[in-house]
Length: 284
Image 1: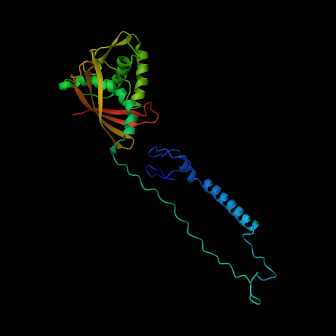
Image 2 (image 1 turned 60 degrees about the horizontal axis):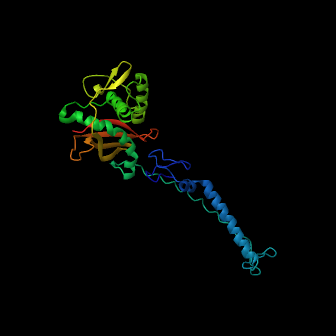
Image 3 (image 1 turned 90 degrees about the vertical axis):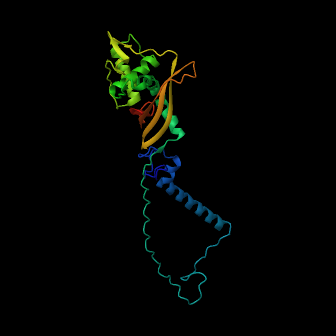
């Protein structure tokens, strides 16, 4: 059988397409099974025999009965020797259809896909909105890597969710942050928390055996992020254009400063959100 989405030839019992991940249906697998057609043929033969028997039993059909060496109804003296049976040449086996080669075409994703990406977007929104004010007027150079990825995960746990807090040991904080990074990035980034004089290194600093939030507290502000466009540029890989920033909770006229980002996201069925963040770039 072939995948309905990409045309890839599959085994008869495959539940998913190994190329694009499309689920096959029960009817696809059933109609592709040789056992199904064998059973169907047997049922048809039994039904045909039953119908023939019924016609004979009710007298609607009579079979010729042979007499002597000649066939019934043959003229006297006519040679009734059976003619040799004709042997038909075996038919050439029809070649199985070849699956049409699947060629991926970049395209904007569907609304359903936008819904699937929403949980991951919700997780990256707070830090990207918070970071936007630090890039206003070019006051800081954008840097993304292990350090920024670590601060994003720590910011979610420390400042947004309160899952870790001042007073927790650094070993506990490191353990929880690594778990959060696994959920967000899979194997794309490693834990790397340093303290320095540039953003985002100074957002957290060590104090004794714990960490303290070292940036300005957000007062009367809330996180805002708008997804502008999502494009599947390679199969299972997505480029997402967003605009994020802090806005006033009480003053709707205060639009705040928004920064554009381009997020590169990969589909990952084993990840908690179904997708993981592969890279972040600041829009020019």
